[in-house]
Image (cartoon, rainbow, N blue to C red):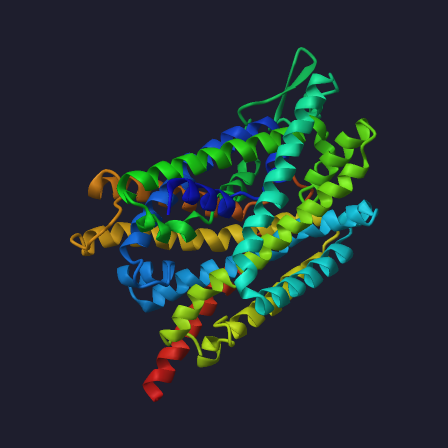
Length: 474
């Protein structure tokens, strides 16, 4: 594998259009949040996972193997279960973005704000994607690459170009008209309101968006196993990761900035912000028909992303089933070697999660609530991953490591420690309602996340206890 191939694979795994409107909601302060996410999360995660991935590449299993080697099978199972279940929560979030685009295609964009339609469309799209992934597993890599180029990169480039022309043509810059009441992202001096570059933190709720912005840069650990496929992993892997991180930072940042240029603050919706920006920008130049073209591309990108990930993360869970950490029926595969029972089970869970839209009046709040649940579950996995990296340097210092975190043992302590503190901080933030969203019941928001996180955390623990008792009886 070449450095360029790894750069493109990493960028494709991390970059997603769904995060663009999320960052746009905090306007120009987004760059501070993104810098924090890149320095304290993305880079440590990339380096630590690279060391673990290359060290245990021959064993497979990903995070399950890493944490199992550091602690035991039960803790490893908790880690991989968190990785798997967060991915299940991620599906409704991503498909919601595509569902909103579909309503633009059929000429009914107002339905993107209707929870019942969004929920129904999301469920239908997921099961269609599941059917495709089961019927054509060999086509998934090609669908993924084509979908990323046409469904993510092309719309982003066009959006950025549209914003540049918007400014050249001297149209009103939307972020210059942020309501004065939004003191976290705007300041008023001598009666003139201007956007802030550094957020004004009036309460802890002002920085809750940080936790979900951090997760926009997640997923890099899934590609760490490819590090030892490079000719010189010790030097080439850090180079590839830093370039990919820079690309993600710049492209997503400029894309979110483009939305802030075109779309007024009170018009930025988390599920349809990108499409709303296209609609407003193209309408200004009598090119409204292009909005539908962009919507088609966005749907292609979302569908390709979902199809690509439906069978991927669950393969790590398959390793635990084969390792007797799950009931035997979970280890069943079809004629193509795809873990069919695990995939069908995750479909049932996705359907239940999508039903949340049916009961919430505000689609934005439901979208962010799912995003926060996704964040809490994923961050638990990252906590275990960092602890595993640090512990293995102490318990197995002589283990052959094709790639090592720069700085030796102290380097692992530094990067692993920084990453650990960052994810714990972000995890705490997840349970606090954001001040930027109209949440009618902050108590429900917090209780939902606490209960949801505890339930999903207890499931692997209870399964492990059951399987241990079953083995003893057997």
